[in-house]
Amino acid sequence: MLCWMIILIFGLGYAYLFTFISDKLYFLPLYLMGGFLISLILFAIFILIVIWTAPFTKQNNKLKHKIIYPLVKFVHTILKIKIEVIGRENIPNDTFVVYSNHKSMLDVTILYQAYHKILSAIAKNDLVNVPFLSRLMKGLGVVPLDRNNDREGARNILEAIKRVKAGNNYLIFPEGGVKSRETEHMVALRAGAYKLATKPKAVISPVSIIGSSLLSQNCPKKGTKITVVIHKPITPEEYQGLSTNELGRRIANIVNMGIDEEKPNTCLLYNSPSQRDGTLHRMPFSA
Image (cartoon, rainbow, N blue to C red; front, top):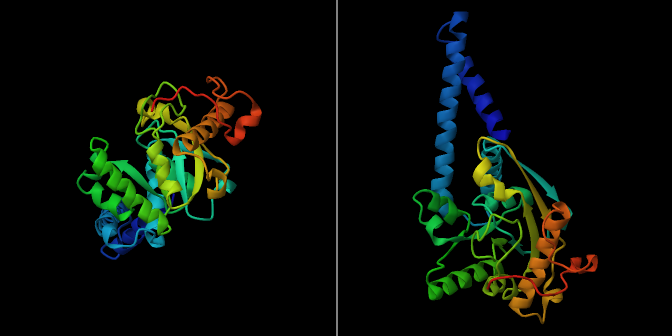
């Protein structure tokens, strides 16, 4: 909405300036078209400048967030994605790490809009190497993760841990990629992903994304409703003493239960309502 308002204001402004060239009213449609075209070009140039200069600004720069956030919402509108957020009051005030199920390449931007906070991510190495996009991702503090090189991957996680310690919020998908679009559930567990929160003793924010598995077949022709359920945060005191594998299973229980409550036709992976707090039990995960 903000993007359209900016383009509209610029367009009308330039159309008004064009009226000084001629006072013929039948030229007004031409003035309007010219004004909007110029405003679109200037707006595009402005966005390109923001992206190009992003790596030279601080990761948690609020102005950068205020510019990028409406652009993300604009892209979602173009793709006919409607996002419903449940549990916004559960967003932590302290530095936090988000753990979520992962079914779409747009899950990062969906969570960015849902949290409406400065939020960086761990992304696969291929995305960070995309020309021009890589500059924006670096400016947002995105840390590349090389899944084919364990040693390099460990270095990437250590770099992200340093940034969390410095007070930056991060998002990571502990499944290690999109494993299955046949279910919304978190179906895999990589215990090492939980070190991103446990090492710097950050608050953990579990979240369930419901509906993003349909984006690959819906976008952009058909509208898609995405439900984001933000669960109660887990403090360092609560997960102290748990191994990363145990913590991973607890978070997966919370995420999957959130999916089942909003989408009850899925297979339940918990035994009773009392397990909403993440009580551990056996789950069909692949490590």
